[in-house]
Length: 57
Image (cartoon, rainbow, N blue to C red; front, side, top):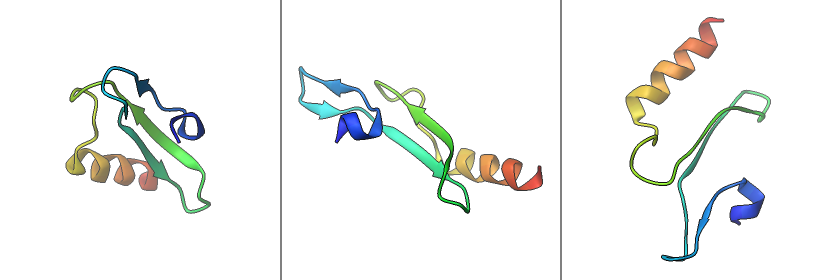
């Protein structure tokens, strides 16, 4: 699964690190976020702001 998403696999804990995607109306990825810890994860408020930004363009 990690390879299919382009995510990072953490061997030590045997987990896929967070991979977040925002899809456009055509189901193409318009934004993505990959991180290896708590920093960089999308918060709901930030997702709403980002979607509003893309819709305003």
